[in-house]
Image 1 (cartoon, rainbow, N blue to C red):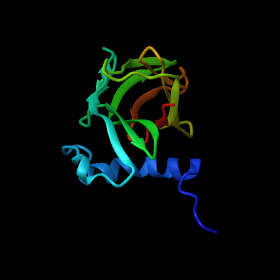
Image 2 (tube, one colour):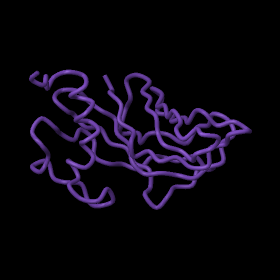
Image 3 (cartoon, rainbow, N blue to C red):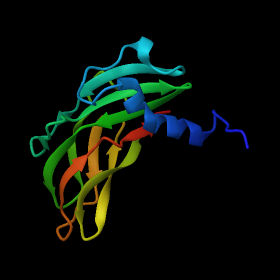
Length: 154
């Protein structure tokens, strides 16, 4: 059966592949130029650091965010990680002021494996607030990596 390249599955598959394809080098390297991007993909806002809350410690790969356009659909993507001590839902910081979010977007990200739970929900509100959900007193979150975060903006 021929693959439909405009299907939701094709768009989401492309969005997951974009960080490696668009950078073309390790994630900490400088972003590729627009000429190096695959056809149908453009960078709307290049990587910018997140504004982290005081109770969040950035990892070596400092958390950052960008917006890419893949076949006419904009995706919010994050990378990097942080350590923390969350025993409840917690705000980790805010988006850079240059990036606006027209609706609440969420994705699932890896976290420390505790009691068999190894992922948490990361949500970006229209105000720019970024929240991690899932920590409890019996199952605290001690680190999160945002490298898998990719969500449709509109």
